[in-house]
Amino acid sequence: MAELGALWIVRHGESTANVAASAAESNGAELIDLTHRDADVPLSDTGEQQARATARWLAGLPADRRPDVAVVSPYLRAVRTAELALADTGIPASVDERLRDRELGILDGLTGHGVARRFPDEAARRHRLGKFYYRPPGGESWTDVALRLRTLLGDLRRDHQGRRVLLFGHDALVFLLRYLVEGLTEAELMGLTREHVIANCSVTGWSADATGRLTPDTFNDVTHLHAQGAPPTTEDEIHAEPV
Image 1 (tube, rainbow, N blue to C red):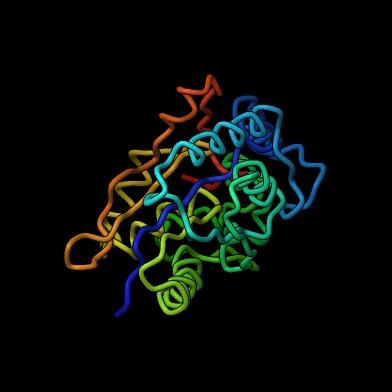
Image 2 (image 1 turned 60 degrees about the vertical axis):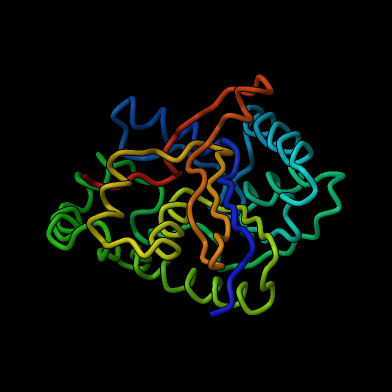
């Protein structure tokens, strides 16, 4: 199969809902204090600072390493991150709904404590099925998200053969791209999710080797944030799940 020259994914900058979710979990609340629907959650001030630091990282890349094109989640926090990061770069960008965050259905807006209290049967079902295959009512499993990402990768390989592609998306997508690009097993993927929290505006990337195969060269990297004095943050995504 035709391959890309390079691929990166940047998680969006810190959002106001990331902050609210962390506070709710810390306080033992059942509900996260959300004032927007998931698609309309904006960046926090820190998130905007992180996105501008990402712009300076892009500006500092040599010409033969700069992305040729960017593809962005339609959710506001990712769109705004891309707008700030791509400003004055001349890199063309488009929005693709397949990069949206994972949908959690009836668990939307609940903390892990809230799920356990309000939907104990769902918490038990998730524990039995495992994180990879569990699909909350009205929502998506990780495998559902992997399927839409798999189709997106196929389109990117077809339309941008040999080119360098930059994605802006969400934390689960970072893990699932590693699963798809690197051919990880379920156990290997779930091990990554236990060991790492994807930082806001972190960079994960792969480059084509001598055979044309994409191989990993950076994961969850926030070196550019430190270099620009932007505070790294590692809040989980808006929705928490039962453990």
